[in-house]
Length: 381
Image 1 (cartoon, rainbow, N blue to C red):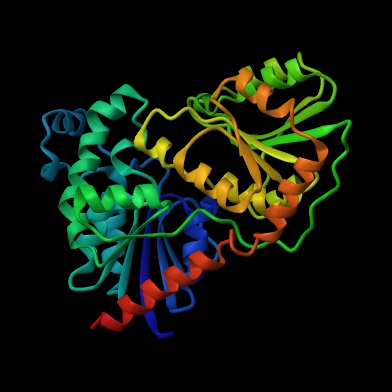
Image 2: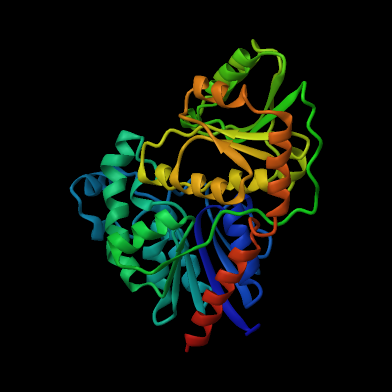
């Protein structure tokens, strides 16, 4: 199958998109991979069709926004600047044996290019509520994502999502059999570090998003006092509040804000800490059934985990015994959880993460993807 040509579409900066990069690595086992997306040519791509950063993947002209508002969705498809560029350049790239669409917004382009070629949709999170906490997105774009899922998902040849809960939603709402491919990091060969009972080292990594309750993490450490420290590895994002976080952290001894580190380096950097912490209010279905990459990053760093309540997270922590669930998403709930933990309990959490590091790595997910791709390519004419 090494002469097979595979098209991988993702309206994201693929070179920095960990999930899509892992996907490309698996696709590369079966043939040459042509990628379509923003940013420079990603690792593992044989050919890259770069969408200009200025070319949005959703309608932003007055006419396009009006069509979204009037629910004229069929006339909106493939009309955004990003889609037009991608469609034109992809047509010149020739035919493919498999087309992979990442997220709902890639589905119209995938089907426009596929013809009789199989289409594999990796839906990642719950597309109809991708940014549902933003009113304009919820009113204009969310229904459009619902339309794309309803129109195209019953026609795909395979579909995946990041958690069992989200896979169930896709099956129930759009009638598409959806397998689970988690956002798990690659296996890292390292060991848990020892725990200093007089200094518990907390860490959080991710985007400086107002929905991530990072200020609450800082407030909790201030309340807990000298026995705890918190290190934050944060990426600035549009609409985030990194400056506010830095300002608040500067007033609390033991809290340090770092620049972000590359995803491939993150588990090694995090390995020096004891507990990975994450408080996440559940405002949408995507939030409810989230199973974030930081869960798996913390495992590969051999940390104990402290997460706020969510069904998928709770089931994993209960199964693997590598952490604890807080009673809520407030600073007070985190304080109540942390103040009673012993060094021995934290050491046991870290040992459990080490014990199950292979099972909670990308290795099982790769096998699922390999089976899907192998099946689709064997069906491709």
